[in-house]
Image (cartoon, rainbow, N blue to C red; front, side, top):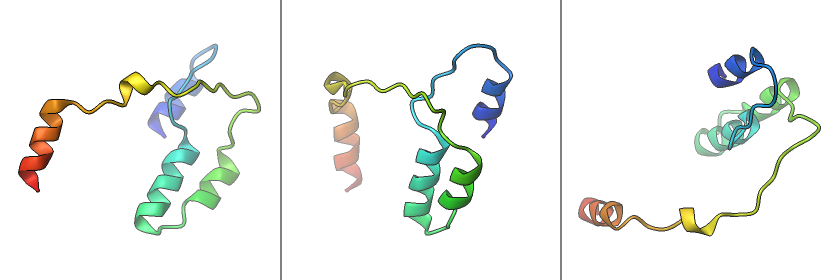
Length: 73
């Protein structure tokens, strides 16, 4: 919400890689707390949205992170 509020004070377009609705959906899925309906009624997506195709190169496994993950298991 802080980022959203700060962006409203700027002129021009501001792009977020995820929106409030996405965050609320994830929170509701993880906790069961019913936040999505209330938040989505107040904070709608803009009528014009910006979509890009997936960027496969950024979804690679970092070998160091994979080793750390394996040590925790």
